[in-house]
Image (cartoon, rainbow, N blue to C red):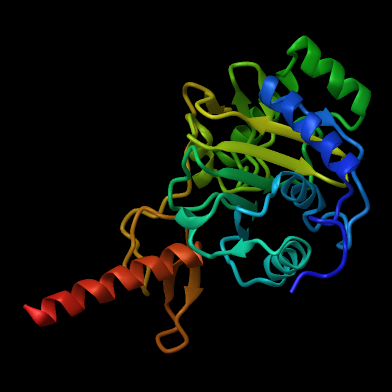
Length: 288
């Protein structure tokens, strides 16, 4: 039952300001647009940027899915879903294909997202150049001048030290052949999903007060050298011990019986869907 409050928690003026910010972000792909980040009933750093985008866009016909590092049932995901449900009454789902809005922390769903959906990524640090330049006014100037030698030098130093780039997550990308952008702390495995995505991708950082966007069918290229090409996490020869899936991002866990490493789909909803498919196939075979 909805609690007695403003629809979607935020007042209409706040939602209009955030939607105007989103429009500007869509018009300039990869550019970080400042916005007046509101106080939310969750701590900054726990998804307030993504939540404000969700609350500003959601309508009564929408169906919401919330993911936290691949899981629909984590504390962060459940808390956000409860707030949105209590203030809007919208339908919730764990099925990616049934959702119209997907708010996610640290993952892009395994199931391809479509033109009828919007992916909203929670971002702790929107500035891709922050590790090489601490001053905000300087990073703004670097973006304006398209001066990205610091980002290239960071990757070069990693290669010299480790033999390859060492960005396990949040590997910087070039959006629309212009801005070097932080894709949020998604694993490298998910970076290619941003390229020419059918869905609108919005990224919100509440603590840093920034919103930026990757519009549909936009070129997104992971930063890399020609002789050291970008590589995703390698799961070749591995499969999920539950559903048998391959070619997806997996978590390595230790089998309590054999004490050997086994693998499991990180996207729990996708894994459950594959299990259901497998069970249906087995039932059909049993009837033949």
